[in-house]
Each structure stands twice: as C-alpha cells, then as structure tokens.
Image 1: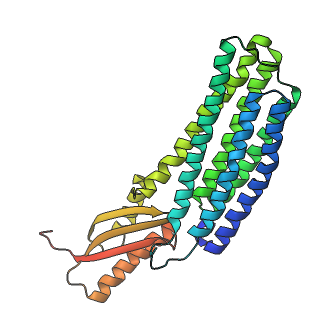
Image 2: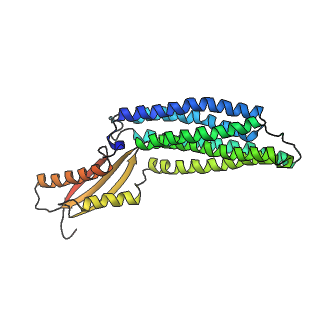
Length: 306
C-alpha cells in the first residue's frame, strides 16, 4: 500500500502546511526583489513577473486555511468529510491565476499600443536580466519541492499551488527572453519587453484553465474518470459471489473516492453470506483506492427476469 493512502489527516495537514509556508516566505522575498528589479531595471515584463509572484501569497494562504478545514473528521453536517474544501481551494487558486493573467495581459497590451504610437521604451538594465534568471531557478526548484509533497500526500490543492510556482518559472523564462531582446537587439526591439508580458499572461490563463476544470467537475459531482470506473467494475466482477452489478455511481470528495453500487447475488444466499460478499467487494476496492474510500453497496437477489 502506498504512502499517500496510509498518511493520517494530521500528518497530511502538517506536510501540506510546511511546504506551503516554505513557498510563502520564498515568495515574500522573491516578489519584493522582482518588483524592485523591474522598477529600478526599467522592465515592465519584470514588474508583471513580480506581480505574478505576489499573487502566490493569496494562494498560499488559501491552501493553508482550506487544507486545515479539509482535514477535519466527519460530522453531522459533513457525513462524507470536509474534502471538498480542498477542492474549493484549488478552484480559488485557478481563479486567482485568471485575475493575475488578465491584469498582466492588459498592462502589456497598453504598453504595446503606446509603443506603436510613438512612445520610446527605456532599455532594461542587467539588474532585471539577472533577477529573471534567479527567479527561474528558485521557482522551478520550489515547483518540484511542492509537487513532490503534493503527490505524496495526494493533495490537489498543494499540487495546484505547485503548478502556480511552475507558471511563475515559465513566466520568468519569457521575461528573460523579452528583457534580453530589449537589451541587446536595439531600440526598436524594446517592444519585446511588453510583448513578453502579454505572452506570459496568455500562458497563465492556460495553467489556470487546467487547474479549474477538474476542481469544478468535482464540485459539480462529476463521475470519476472512465479508467477508474473500469477498474472498479473489474474489482466487483472478480469478487466471488457477485453474479452481476449495476447502478455504479462514483464521485470525489477531496482526496477520497465515494462509490455506490448495486450487486446481485444468489437468492438462496443467507443474509450473512450476502453481507460477506458485499464486505469482500468493499475490501477489494479499498485495497486499491485507499482505506478512506467510501463504498456503499446495495444487495439484490439475482433473478433471471432481471
């Protein structure tokens, strides 16, 4: 059984909080440095990049708060647990990225328009160039650290935050290219700096969409992926005593699968025997998808007319 299944909620919450706080403090320093480098180094692309990093503060707080809530045990108001709070956090992260992308795109577009109408952009300095390179290294390292922990604890919110770091690393790559072009290709090529910020904005929109789609799907009670449902069906069919099954319904609550089904057994089976068959089905599914998987089984007699 893999580690993400055996982790307790308390350990999972602590690991998620630790990786998020590390990202928070790194972003605190990096955002301030990038914005300062953009202002002093005369680079709108670097300023946009710094604002992107600044948005990580919001998402870091979202992850810390909602991971804590999602780790609570079931109660009378949430009989299946609080896992969807984490899903909601993932959706909020994606929306934050959308907002950041729109702001960066708008700012870059305005500067491009001004350049096309005669404005001369100042040449960026080496400070902005060096800061872009530093940002790439730091944010890519932070991405891998966050994504590895997120996968280990099976946390979609932490994984989403990791992709937020990766989007920042990619935006810094674009910033580096734009600043380099604006610095070394001559005055007429300085438009590459705001053009780069627009491209960065479009890239962030793509990342935000990839994060938003599965979280919205889960909040709207969408079914588990077809390959997962096929795996579940195979586990049911391979269980001794199960003659047929139907009404398989699946959904996700945070990192927990919820699975409902009807199974058909020999009508001559005793109540104890039918219950044992259902328990066997439940155990096979939990052995595959984790002990916290919720499995609800309705037992029916198998009749030929059915």
